[in-house]
Length: 205
Image (cartoon, rainbow, N blue to C red; front, top):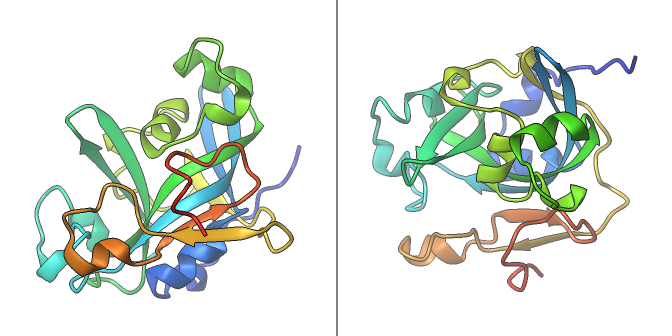
């Protein structure tokens, strides 16, 4: 069995933009009663706190929904979108900063059959965890994992293989058009040759 070594606390105690780029290639491990899924991260977005109009923490706003975003780096921030989908974020920085990285897409390394139980149909393997809602659905990430520390089961981030040998592209974040000038910030990071990267792709340079 492959040993998955969790990332050290210092990895997360940095600005969201720095952590975002370094998350590509890391492994997200989901331990389920029926087995384990290992997924390689290939697309993320950084959200930079009180000065970022696209962030849930814009102007330091704290609510029951986003309280986990203000934990110390290395925790999960899970929230609902449109009342249906879940989105998984990795909190970064120091306690109280309110900065995080949204996990948008991943390639399955292990456990495809377990993912297909949650995402039935004839989708190609590369599309099963493409998009933040699909990633959470395929890995059974739901609200009980909000605030979970990502150094231990049932959900952990491990060293994996940083994507230094695969081209990485950047572009504006998805769905942030109403965020003023911050909508154009190139804080979406994606592994260019991965079929798992979500749409739209044209804005990635």
